[in-house]
Length: 161
Image (cartoon, rainbow, N blue to C red; front, side, top):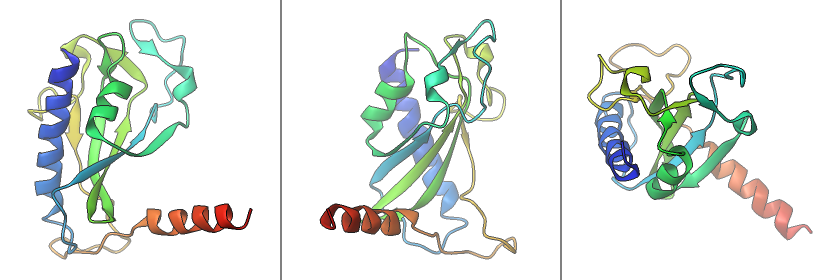
């Protein structure tokens, strides 16, 4: 897979994720997207053979990056994470925030990728937004924007220096 093909898959899975989320959320979801990427959420052992694993990715999260930056980040030496869970996280500043939770194992073999049999956008697995406690099937809910408060906190800290 080339980096361009990976970027196309990211965009296609983002569209699928966006459509899927509309079944669950009451928010108006803008058709502008930004990404938050959590790396190595599978906490893979660097000694594992047959994959590229980057120990420096442990607990690493990048927020509010563009799709092209996601492709630059996740396409490494011709390899990609073997699974990437994709879901709508929230709406922030007239943009739909897409969360990507990534495996720590990188491979260039399609047979290593998860979701090959379930999704047309492997290695991406489209997931629902995080359901609130007590959610009842069929009821739509509002997404919480955790970036609003964190941005305010960062601005407050910056101005208090």
